[in-house]
Image (cartoon, rainbow, N blue to C red; front, side):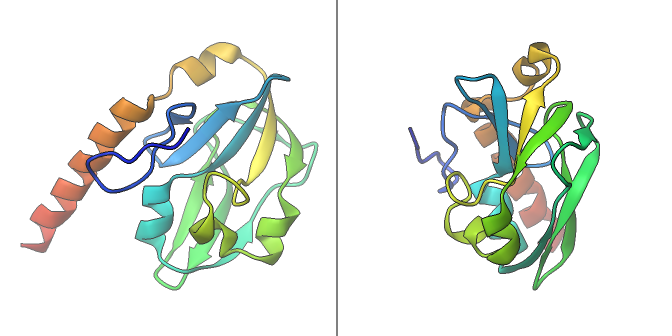
Length: 145
């Protein structure tokens, strides 16, 4: 279920979020789907390239697993949890603007076989993430003055 917060961005309640603006959704089979938040895709601008790991690679929580390149910048992608990459979204590699169009749906990045379920619980919920994003926006506005 998607829900608009005070920032004007969508932060679905069934997702967990990182301070680096990735999200993770635990599926019924225990696999965690990973993507970037609505706020992140908006801040990046038009995304033109995505580099993702291969299936079978191991990723570690908090470490880079790829990057996204936009017309504004290049940003690393950080794994919200540790585990083995079991699926890569080839559609988003071929059509990177899926991240801009549907960051919580067709714009997902990778699926990870979760190594330690407690890692997901350590991430922010949608309310905590919305407050974090509001702070980020306020800091950004302060820097422009």
